[in-house]
Image 1 (cartoon, rainbow, N blue to C red):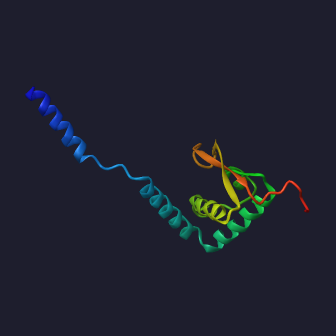
Image 2: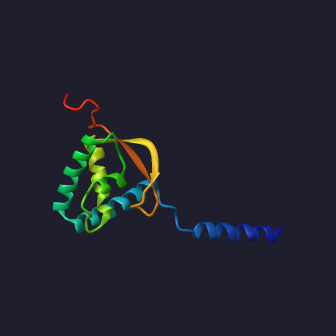
Amino acid sequence: MAQQRDMFGAWVEAERTKRPVPSASAAQRAQDSGIDKSVEHAGQDWLDYAKRFMRAFCERHATVFCDDVWEAGLRQPASPRAFGAVMKHAMRQGWISPSGEQRRSRQSNNAYRMVYVSNLYSTTKGS
C-alpha cells in the first residue's frame, strides 16, 4: 500500500511540474504575433498590393484556396507567412467565408488549409 502511495505521489509531482498546455487564445495570440512580424518584414507596400490582388481574385473565383491565389500570380513577399494577414483581412472585410472543406497545401508543407467561399464572386457577370 505504501508503494502505491509513493507511486501516486510521484505521478502527482510529475503532473504538477508539467508545462501547461497553451489555451486556444494563447495559441491565437502567438499566431497573430508571427503574422505581424512577417508583415513587418514583407512591408506595407506588399501588404497593400496583396489586399488588392486578393479582392480581385475573390471577384473572379467562387472558391479561395491559398495555393490557388499563389498560382494566380500573387508576388511572394519576403516571408510567405505574411499571406495570413491578407486572408484575415479578407475575412474581416467579408470577402470570404470558411467553406468547412480543407485541402493539403503545397505551399505549406502539405499541411491542411481551409478552403473559403468567395462572397464577392458573382455567377452573373456584368449584372
